[in-house]
Image 1 (tube, rainbow, N blue to C red):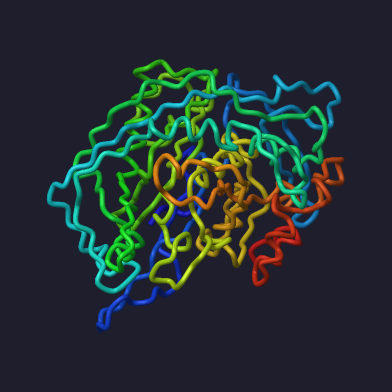
Image 2 (cartoon, rainbow, N blue to C red):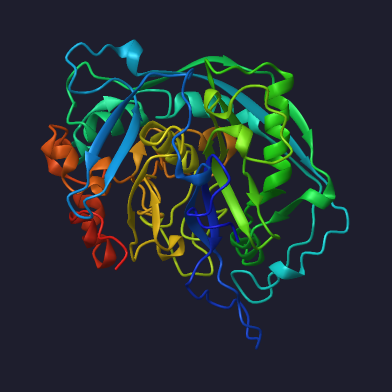
Length: 451
């Protein structure tokens, strides 16, 4: 398992899919007990010693807000990408992030890996024979650029009705700036040639995920082959690549894979599908030539529909549409990283520790990471025609992730200082989330601390 995000010694925020606490239905009449399949979990790995990073040079403008929390009466200081929304002189160029996309073509090899730990994952009888397989992130570049991450889409009226990029719409709703000239946008200034990466068998595995294996066995051939690579090996690779290719602090690189994820501590410690942060402190063996805070990055995997249960009909039961809390697909991971990078660009925005029944896997955690409290939920945006090209069923939609707003962490301090959200909600989806019932209703209120 990945370390809890309260653990020190990294500068990367991570979104992962890990073993869920829900039983799967066995697919055969056998005494073998199925292991739970994976569900989304989001983990933040903050900078060491809970200190804010040096930001002498960055790829973006940011502003700072200091406050005394009205609940625990402690002083906090948090930073956000963009211009201060209460400064009437804000300009779009002060709210933008220049990105470069670095697609990775990752080659995995069957090399005698022991996959017995994956036996019976999802349903009784599942096995994961190692495969030779190549995952080409380059084929997803156009998909990402056309998606709401970089292109403007119309948002539902109940979420403000904005027309904007995903991150821009999130920030404009968070700061009650829908319909104004306030923006926080991504500008992709370069796409690098696809980088070929040979993953040693000792550090990676390609295998058919349980959903695809079950569907194929039941007459519904489905390709949900995924690649998983060792987290430390991968982090070292991208940091060394950045150094060798002169990636400087004036851009934010996005390392893009096609359904390649990461594991930590074995194949069942899986699967990291994205992170953002400052690379020099990510791994002890990196040779970063610039201070960590001066170079920020993202990694995200385009997610194949059906890689995780909840999107397609499978052993969990009949399904005609993705689950609104488990339908992981397409830009889910990248949307998570964009929103979290905008609200916690250096992974050092420490707030009053929080704990929520919707994300008990984090324990009591003190980081302002917007996707972590609302693990799993998403909303659909029409216009995804990717399926006509790659053959997967996206139901004609993109599936960006839900996020809480910064106000949820600050218990009224932002509102009292003149920074309310659109219509006072505490999450991007608002009533769409709380209307799910159960523990989701709690997001009508601020974070409740750890008692």
